[in-house]
Length: 202
Image 1 (cartoon, one colour):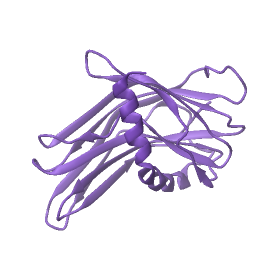
Image 2 (cartoon, one colour; image 1 turned 90 degrees about the horizontal axis):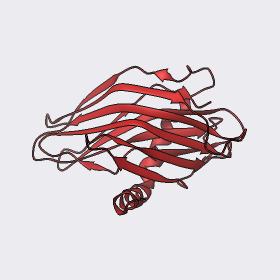
Image 3 (cartoon, helix red, strand yellow; image 1 turned 90 degrees about the vertical axis):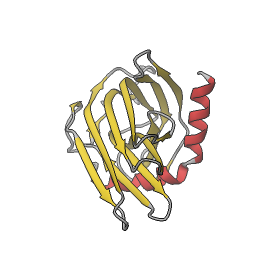
Image 4 (cartoon, rainbow, N blue to C red; image 1 turned 30 degrees about the horizontal axis):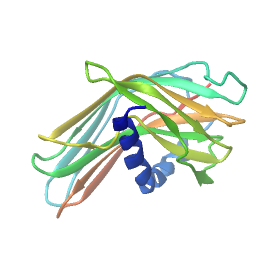
């Protein structure tokens, strides 16, 4: 793993409180959700008390099942792709985080950040790589697709392609959904969150 990737993972681990908030979104993730494949786009606009506007868009998202690298009956894996676009007022102090909430049997009784993996950047600026994480029944975790990104010039974009999420030690149904959040600091504080459609990890 590169030094840049390690630094990004440490920063994300330090943001465990953000991941804890993410777990709230698991409430609607049940076994009846659709299988992996092309997923719907999404968007959200949030206006602050002083009129500041923050927008989040998720475009071209997809998730396809792939064999787990562990090649056992307790492994679940998928490759995900998509583009996240965030806007905030120019000159503001705003940050974008994005990734996936992953749960095992969707009984939110615990939270784990025990993941490892790598983030790679292609010449086109598109992120790829893989993450492997242990999940026992009743656990959920936030899997990042990049380190937190400062929104400069009013816009930030995160693109990723065929990034693999590999879940281990899950003895039952496993599911995931996209999670993106913009935090605007200052006198008019805004925290805007956009969830994606849940999908199963086979």
